[in-house]
Length: 313
Image: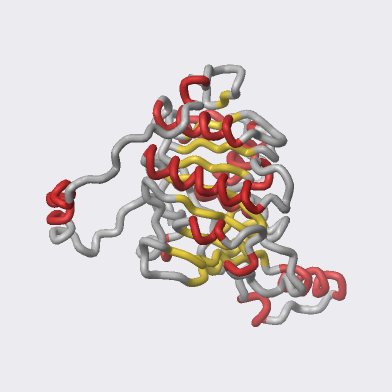
């Protein structure tokens, strides 16, 4: 089956149906065996990992949950998610990207550059790159506005037919008509959370934060654009922040020929802020450094890109 598909390639009619009204009231004893097994591994952390090793004991992406990836326009949310999805593929996790703002070809070209760890991958690298993604990545081909009903069907199809474990929806604003449609946003995010639980997959949804007075400070969950119920419904909230103050300092130093201050040089190029972690105890900030040639975000100031075709950092 092709890794790229659209509504023209499959009949989604049977996946449009409303959620079945199955009985959800059960005796407590239904979970007796699972509860007992928690005693065997009480501290075991489960779920797909981010590419950066320092996060592995803090953040995971489990089936049945929904994560919001938010940030200011131009902060690199989608680009960073490309890193994350490549990491999922390296862990043998199956993902589908539904980007309504970028074509599948452009998405794959950017991810190929990230996987190649250089600015201009050789033509021959494409075969190695596609072997990494074979059976582990699909792309839904539709740009522009999408009806929530269609996306509902696509996600069900991906979960039931393609056995997808991670669904990336990029972005929320393309799925709700009008930036002031608070009820539409609430209902759509609620639908995603219900689908994640019912289909036992992890859904990643990209969204924006309000434009604040000071972009030099990382936003918080209180800055997420739209209704507060968006954050309330999510299981995890990850905020992507780009250090534009450092970028300005580097540009100014280059223009004047002055040496960049060590304190500025050592600061991270970006920050991934975990602002909500419903089923984990940790919340905090993850410093990241940007490797421009590969478009990768790396986990330390050495800025050494990750080898997704080999071992992760």
